[in-house]
Length: 95
Image (cartoon, rainbow, N blue to C red; front, side, top):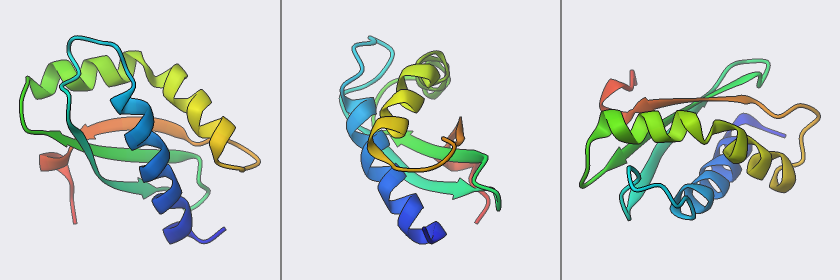
């Protein structure tokens, strides 16, 4: 699978999975701005933003839900190995 296709699939799956989280620290609308994959697809850096709420609390909540989110990715994206998810604020993104 090409990196662009994988990034697109991961963005879709994670957007849906994050919107389904029942954590008060996660605002109603969280946007997955972009995903950066390492060359071996071992790590997926997920850059998120939110209109409301505290970004530090959001990142903490997403890091706490990493296992659940990785299971969602494993179920919906067919890869030999599911990438480890790392969450970052979109404002930290290096273009």
